[in-house]
Image (cartoon, rainbow, N blue to C red; front, top):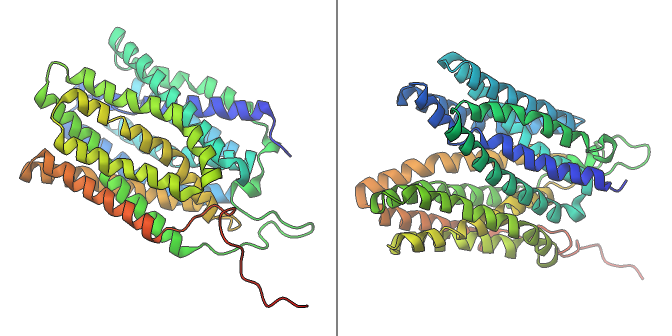
Length: 409
């Protein structure tokens, strides 16, 4: 059954409101807990535990999604848990409650992001998933940008806890958007990457094995990418603060908003071109922007030019927000392990990102910020080389047909 416009619009707005909900758990957590007279040690412990929970929950979350028969229900429960954790932050800012709420939010987030991708695949199928992922990224980017501005204004005009009250209230429009998606239009087999069963066959019949070699190469590329990327913006923020303290906040805000605009504009284009040109060329473009950005950060001194260089992050984010789930869908087609593989790749993202900041901090303290940016750019270049040399094209339309036995006359 073809997905209706009502369901597709519902998915658009669900991606938009989920980004709104998740924005409340960004930098606002540290600001809020600081105003509540928390020590930096306790704040760091809560954030660290949340990060560890996000890391270890990726693979179990993916396995749970593959076992579930309704990604829509899983997404609804995850949004409810995140809103409950926001209420806990706002109502009881004491260590045991906030600690539990942070773990709850991290666990629910391990389900929510993959559930959106799975619902997208179940609605539109493999042939149209590229452009669909681009639309998801566009609406998520717009939602994140608008909600950051609204929540920042609420925190400034009222009190910081109002950010979490707004986050909790967003449960209503988020669930309303999810209700627009017709359950019967989300194909459960497609959402798991399973082959469509033949009439009279069991749902798991005919599954193929995961292609391990390209999957390992892709996972290594993702780890290297996040190892190189995660520390760049925080390191740039520190550098801008030292060079132009008066304008640092404005410049950092521009560094955050500018790439979001690029993502909103370019993500659907990346999805469309991936269907025409193949996945590898688009992925290589996104990867190439990262070492170039690192080299510019290492060599440019003008703070305004550095903000312009940060726009390359939007190019990379637009490509990766589409290519990562799209290539996972390609690699897992017919295996029934789509969501489990999403969890595996999410784990690689988390490992790379968690190692990036301490690595950059060590190099900065020992040799300076330019050396740190050169190091991060070199890691990104290794990832680019790995993909160029070893990663095959994953688009089934671009792959050569399988070799058959000798034709008979």
